[in-house]
Amino acid sequence: MRILVVEPLAAEGLELLRRHHEVDEQLDLPRERIAAILPEYDALVVRSQVKVDAELIAAGTRLVVIGRAGVGVDNVDLEAATRAGIVVVNAPTGNTIAAAELTLALLFGLARRIAPADASMRRGEWKRSALTGTELRGKTLGIVGLGKIGQAIASRAGALQMTVIGSDPFVTHEQAASFGVELVAFDDLVARSDVITVHVPKTKATTGLINRKVIERMKPGVLLLNVARGGIIDEADLAQALRDGRVAGAGIDVYTAEPPTDNPLLDAPNTLLTPHLGASTAEAQVAVAEEVAEQILEVLDGRSARYAVNAPLLTPETAQAIAPYLPLAETLGRFAAQLARRAPRTLTLEIAGEPAAYDASSLVAAVLRGLLERDTMERVNLVNAATLAKARGITVVERKTPNAGAFASLLTLTAEADGQVVVLAGTVANGEPRLVRLQEHAMDLAPADVMLISHHRDRPGTVGRVGVLLGEADVNISSMTLARSAPRADAYMVLALDDDVPAKVIDSIEADEAVIDVWVVRLDGAR
Image 1 (cartoon, rainbow, N blue to C red):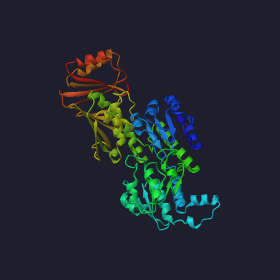
Image 2: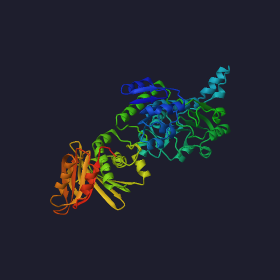
Image 3: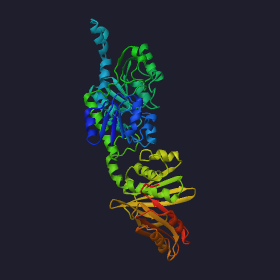
Image 4: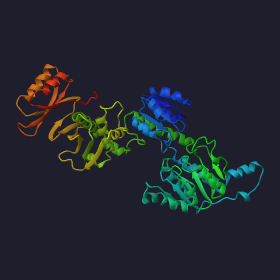
């Protein structure tokens, strides 16, 4: 496959990609040029400067994956990528130490007034008393966001004998305590901290998280740090607080607009400003490049990427346990779509036995993929299947039970559409999908690419007449499964075929007086 790299990536990451695929490194391209050549590529690699918006994503008609070499993905339109079925991956751990160390470097620089001291010396001054600093020992550090970077900072701050408190709605008190942090509410953190550092993604909820009103509740003389994303701290409000002396100093590495040409912090006092250097160490550049390259290779190889931003996040254990059931789930979805003949309004997937012990989001997505792929020109995959289903008004219900009856595992799919109900069930035997239920009838069927299914009255000669019609059309039968509710009642027959069925043959079968309904189910992707 072809991979386009449009921003600098460490040689180690490029080499890893080149071992498996064709890589074009084309840096400093104008946006128009990227859009023009993007249809030729299966993967795109960016850092933070190239904006991968909906327009650029639409140009990438072959794109399977977008790799963001770094933590944040705010320069990638995740909604547009998801709709297009493109996996977005990032490298959330490669720059952890680099970002944590820069945060502490800014903190030390502010506490000991390193930048003004250096400037004073270069002016030929020796003003020691005017440059008196502050010790960090015994001070309270408030960390907003206790992800990997927040945790790394906490462990290092503990070694400095600082009191560390943190705020994060997704972390428990026990988890926070395990890395030396007292978990508190955000308002409590604001009121107690001598130093506040933010390590959260930029979202609607976190934009302007620290503003004038929040700053007014802080201790006078607080130090503020931002090595996360520009805009989490309101820059105009911070600049004013610095001028008023409410905030004693600010260490800022990221900005709302980069480079920050008209930023109010540029002429605010007591600031230590760096040009987005959080990941700019030699070690981090290599780690980030290798991490994003590994994820891209996983996706291009058809596997689940550990740090996929817009796809279900599965542990390696879950991915391995669920993998054998994905083809079965997709087959059930395809089967249901063709048996129902109209778009289902409600899908219920019951997961029984062994797979019920794991996260089933990928099984639900596989069912949706099978259900939708024949009725849309859009690419349908595990990334966008749920989004496309929601857009079509399909409600999905997931149920789990450890009891699979006579089976080790069982997936049962019920599709409801305008009063019509289709029920299918399947299991995995010897690594292959098997259909074990059609409506209320039990069966044992290995799905084939083409299958003829008849719902008929159980009368002598019906099966033979269908066989004759297929034989006269030179359609070969590879296997047959019969299931009936009672003698001379209704029955289902499923014929696995080596050839497709001509329309005139289907018409002839439907005309048989014993036949209630007939379907040709194609699982090979043919429309």
